[in-house]
View 1: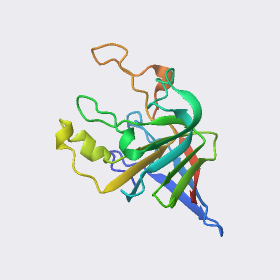
View 2: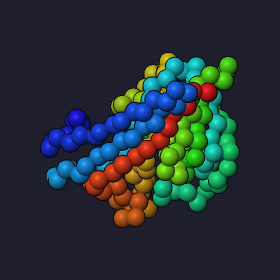
View 3: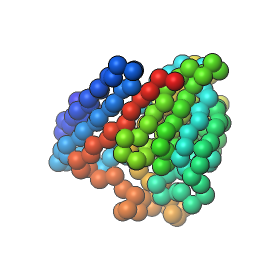
View 4: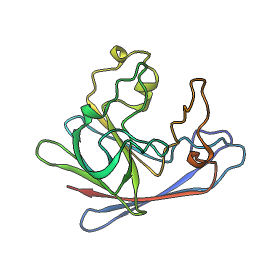
Length: 189
């Protein structure tokens, strides 16, 4: 059950295979009276030592569904610390779109891999939770993190901002309040 008024639900089914693979299937049925969705996915909380990433998708810079022109499709490697973008006001950042697989591991290469079952994912890995980023007015207010937060989603809302006075995202990059299904797999590295 989601914290919405009116109440909405997301049905999530985990199918665990003998080899350790976990298939995740998320389903949302439209509820009248709710606004458009900013995102549809899951947030995973990992130890901060799990901080090396390697992925096949758009990169190396952050990108969103309406901001892909500066990115290229390829295999990229980085660290979680390098994913944070120091905007004037801290905010969620570091998304990578059109990801086919995303590996995150520690120095011993122990970790997990997120793989699309639908062709592509959107993934970010940051040292800060969305709550911590939203509540900091300046970078120095962000905590010393002991956690890595990985967000795996179908498609976050576009960034918009085609002007300097707060324009909304273009229609083709909006996530409307409609039925949504999202499938991906998790593998142990």
